[in-house]
Length: 237
Ligand SMILES: O=c1ccn([C@@H]2O[C@H](COP(=O)(O)O)[C@@H](O)[C@H]2O)c(=O)[nH]1
Image 1: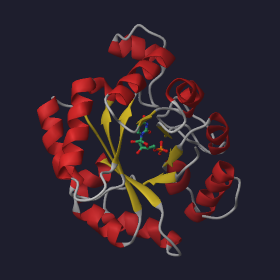
Image 2: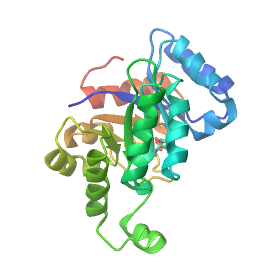
Image 3: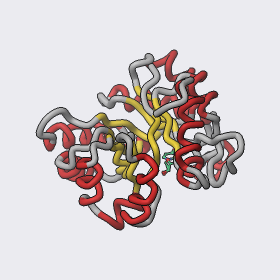
Image 4: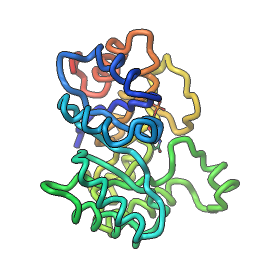
């Protein structure tokens, strides 16, 4: 079930965010606020983006003991974002606590909650060497995603390569939010499991997350439209 193109606002301050968003003043986007921006600007950046009607994925990837994650999610729920996340590596008890905290803190509808399976910057080789996880990467992603589903979460963060497997095993309505997206002309940077927007669409991602291919482009609007065209097969926002 194809849903959104989410733009990663990986900028150091609100000033750069405003400059970037000035290219899109004809309508709101679905944006991602991650650690870089949130740790500098704090909750006020969320308030500001919400006032401008942007939908928001707050990507803080919580990973701690269940009580700490419960309390943190309860607080984050007040911000009224649309989507947020934890690391599946925190385990099922932690994921359940995250969901409970988010539900307890939400005034209206709770944000969707997803879990990071294996970062898109991780290769199978490095996972085995650095993390001592001696399994195939696909098996690890499937196991973590199954844990997330059993814990009541709405979906996962994975690479688009794993989307067909997760669609078959866990159903199409279980979200597969996929970063590691690059236009063919862009550098991979620190990403390893990289896919074009067109390929992510074909593989069955629910939503794609795109940062530097758009934010680092000399014409961000043109890059956004190229990504969107590949993702949706249409040439407008
Ligand atoms: O596995 C993951 C989880 C999160 N991310 C985040 O997505 C964006 C990707 O940015 P690009 O510039 O398009 O590489 C970034 O904010 C990451 O923190 C991810 O890449 N992989």
